[in-house]
Image 1: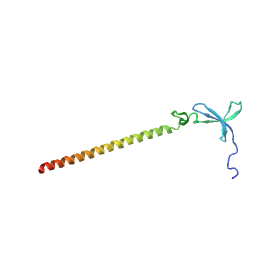
Image 2: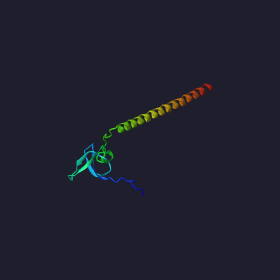
Image 3: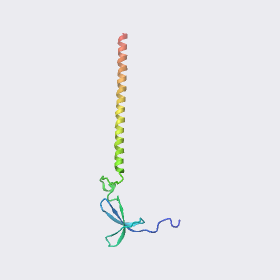
Image 4: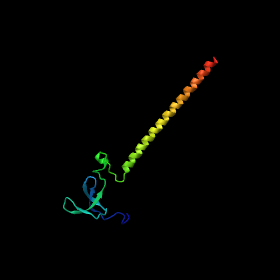
Length: 119
């Protein structure tokens, strides 16, 4: 195995969810200048995160707008635009079908009129 490939500075770190304040202690190599006291009265580095399993909609089962960058809103806008485009295509297809039926009926009427004048 290669030497120095894996980090060797693992230490206890507290992660805090900025959405609901939930905190958990785990091992990490992430750097942090902030510290906090944990339940065991010791100080640990504090890392603040926007989403954890305590606030993520997949784990909580509820939909909330959590995305600071607006990616959720962009996704919803794209989905709405896709649905609108699909409806527009369906309406165009119906209009085209009606035109085709009208054209066939007009040809049939014309053929009937031609037959009746030839008799």
